[in-house]
Length: 212
Image (cartoon, rainbow, N blue to C red; front, side):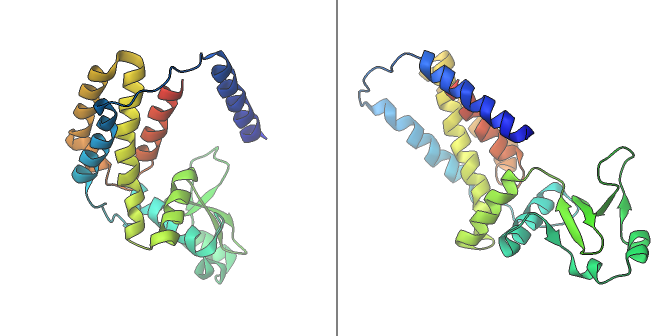
């Protein structure tokens, strides 16, 4: 219910902004319209191939593991058959890890996976589902490890989204300067190839700023 309410309020906000915003002027093509395309090409060349981070126990490995499991099963509720075959009390003592007091899930099976149902061996990924679902769709479309390319693709489009957001706020050339500073930042280039949710969050944030 909360997600439905939140989505409905967001939709009403977008409609209200769209009604209040005046009609855009007629577009005229110019060489400056090629700037976003050039930024996209530069970002693609700099980001290159993605990091194949599949080590469990870390955020990137958890995202990739969740995506692979979702691509195979089609569900976010994952079943650990080895755990399900064990004695429930023995498995709880030997294979489950207690969470912090006050959490809704008292145990987790592995780092990043909550223990939901011991009888069926059901676990639930800890993180928000959007990014692993995008990875799962990419794995189903082009396989692994090529499916990891969705992350640098989103990072490249984040560069373009930042350019448009900056253009709407401060103008074309300051936006281009700021965009190039981000595109050439070593930290951005490193994380833009890493399977972490901050990359799609960055893309969606810049898109949201431009939309407003």
